[in-house]
Amino acid sequence: MKVAVVGAGIAGIACARLLHQAGVETVIFEKSKGFSGRAATRRVGPYTFDTGATSITPRGRALETVMMSEISTQGLIRIERPIYTHVYGRIEPGDPMKNRIPRYVYESGINQIGKRLATGLDIRLETEISAMELPRDGGVFVHDQVFDRAVLAVPLPQAQTLLQSAKDPRLLTASVYRPCLSILLGFAVPFDAPYHAILDPDQLHPLTWLSVETLKSPGRAPAGHTALVAQMGPAYSRRNDKTEDDRIIKDVLVDIQRLLGDEFVEPEVAEVKRWKYSQPESTISFAALNAPGRPIIVSGDGTTGGRIEHAYEAGMAAAQSILQT
Ligand SMILES: Cc1cc2nc3c(=O)[nH]c(=O)nc-3n(C[C@H](O)[C@H](O)[C@H](O)COP(=O)(O)OP(=O)(O)OC[C@H]3O[C@@H](n4cnc5c(N)ncnc54)[C@H](O)[C@@H]3O)c2cc1C
Image 1: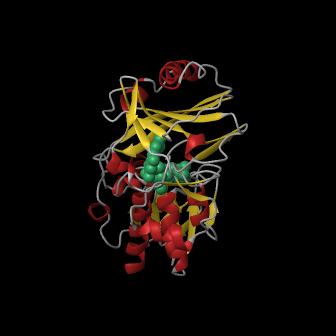
Image 2: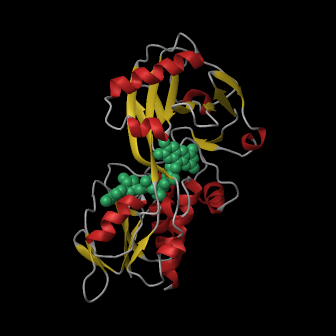
Image 3: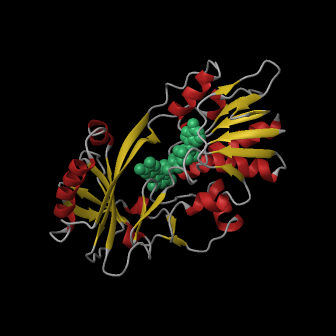
């Protein structure tokens, strides 16, 4: 048996990892230069930013056992400082119940989760799959070879395009993903606070989440510097889909100056990362999408929920459905 997995995010890696452990030959095709997908880290100069997911909350689910006992825990830290809220510019302690949930990240970046889970897997980087075929005599034609099964571990709108290319009639339009503009900012200014992030609980303000990367984890910037990641809400992100970076950076700096103080006006690093598909607003269950025995299996967080631990379970479900049949 030979399986192709499209996408080296957490779902694709989890699927390939379980198949590999069961002795199934598996190849992952990944369009970008690195892996871990939206659990992404970017280094700019002396700063390290988690540009997509900001922390891992395994909450006793399958991922927790794997993280704590199957892969290396070196540099894995539990984030000590809580999340506060900001409402009309006022910063206040957040929900104590939510703050009791353990949150984790890796010192050198959240993408370590994907890198560690992927040890030993066959991943073809910079290989975008733009079409697939279902040959008459069975299997799935992907890239330049026929596989027995293929797993689409990408956001559902991207999976839809691939299904269509293979003339597979399944419709995934019930799942809608929200966009997110993430702004990475590095300041040559120190900052301390009792929190590691602030969020707008009502999602009324364009700036819905501000992570102080340097308070989340050590080593994200040299001493005396501050690394921030600002995530803009879906309404702002949709409206400014085509707005130039400088304009977006100007907008967010107004908010940051108001929230953190007048030292935060001139960043030495400022970049915009545009997530077209950040997290699903609605999901389609894995079982509803994947009748047993189909050559193409649809996985990814659109089948379970927009969290790393859910993406891991989407990958597990895909692997289990292959192993069962
Ligand atoms: C801004 C933001 C904040 C978030 N915050 C959190 C958080 O704090 N905690 C949390 O748990 N989760 C968070 N999430 C959600 C979490 O990151 C995702 O749910 C999870 O990482 C999804 O994993 P996945 O494997 O399903 O998809 P992805 O990570 O998207 O992986 C899909 C992979 O497929 C590749 N790909 C796509 N199309 C093709 C193609 N045609 N050919 C080859 N490769 C292709 C992509 O490059 C990507 O690497 C956040 C996400 C974003 C964007």
